[in-house]
Image 1 (tube, rainbow, N blue to C red):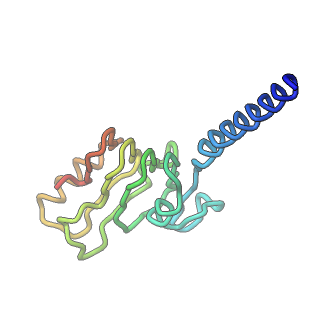
Image 2 (cartoon, one colour):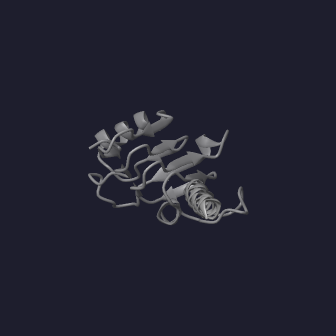
Length: 158
């Protein structure tokens, strides 16, 4: 009887261990990398034409690779660990702009989740007072904006 109980316990422990390993693997596998291209010319396999829908679709800890183009939109990065990265070597050709007539007091990028990154993307404020344009030009040379805590970071800073 004792060996039967031991065998049953061993099976139960194995099932629990496999379940735990499976759940850890599923969590790690949930992070994805997607591509965005406004005209699908440089990256014909891109899943999205705009960055915002890609951000809405990806789970935490994912990467959104942005191909060359002009993206007229505001970004809300509200999932932990999400990275928006310009395509390697082509970041000067990736421009994030506010829509014409957009309120310049509303940030183009809001990073409200921890460990988010925006890198290798230029910003341009299309219609704004002179002080905002000067600030945007200064920001255009900043290669990385990131968060490491639960505070909210906006770009351009308000």
